[in-house]
Length: 120
Image (cartoon, rainbow, N blue to C red; front, side, top):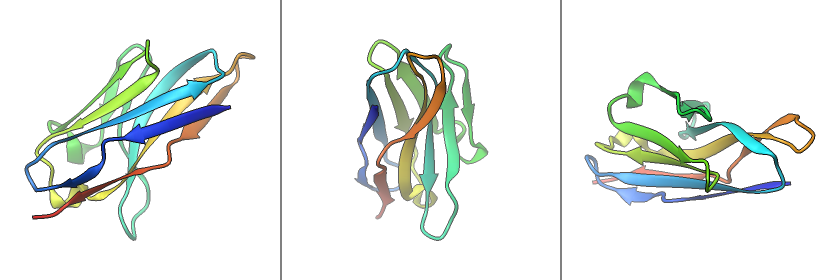
């Protein structure tokens, strides 16, 4: 069993910054890809950013240049630094991790979600 604990969401003014964290714990061999998704009211969940175990990153066009994804493999934690936030960034943000079990199968796990709200 794998647990993901997210933190860092909140209410922020446009132009502000937030840093999200997602820590994985439990029984597994390693973690491959880690990522952040978001879902705004009335919209489908979308990929925001992803990072491989080796550090290669991928971003949605809407956040390029403003958001930075990083990870600490020693802490099994993924981060999302969000700068220059815009009202359209308002959403529930979910972390996703691809875990390699001790029997070498891959499983996807989702965090509980953290709300990010932009309001002036």
